[in-house]
Image 1 (cartoon, rainbow, N blue to C red):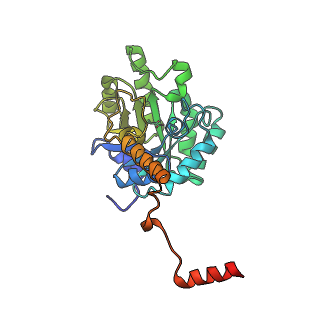
Image 2: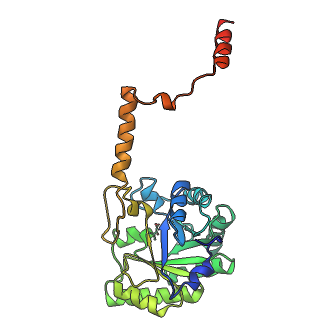
Length: 282
Ligand code: KIV
């Protein structure tokens, strides 16, 4: 692992080289874990809404939520490039508001890049962020902030026309100066074509193996969220079961009086005890 923290230009330089491994993180411990595991880039995703805040989708995630979680993650991340997700309605309005919100992630929260969902329709905002010196990562395909319009979390680019629109959006984002693009839930063939055509790295999630890198939600990788598991997720561990068992053992030991044991207990020194007794009698 290199000493220097990776930058957006470092990601760009990886095009055609070693694949980029990206993970989400949402706080200090998950930031430490992803960084210690050697992730190249760490995304404080707006998936925080579903993974950490118990929301049904990402629409309820606010700038305040994202800044809070990005700050905590930034305190942990020393190696990976830290990317913060722009939440719903933080950039879709005016260009000025988009730049001001994007800038807060770098100025106040320790991120070194932002990610924006959407294609050519947001080029004015993305161009202005880039002009302000804010590295931007694009995100096309299944863009969860459009869940209401899509009518659910549905794979995108399935028709030739839709696929062609994705290719056009990817080109526009690359031409604008994005340093990378997340391709979410798009067919392998479409992801492969975009990857071959663009001079910037593509990071896939449910977009097949031919992207320049991959991103997964850390809690999905670790098996920390029981319930829904999208087809494209590979779960590398089941931490939910041992974590739940450990917590249940703690509850049982508290109730039975086994915890805390002598090893977890601090006693007063004879002097402290004498003084304590004297004060009680005073
Ligand atoms: O919010 C998120 O976690 C994301 C990734 C899954 C790409 O956008």
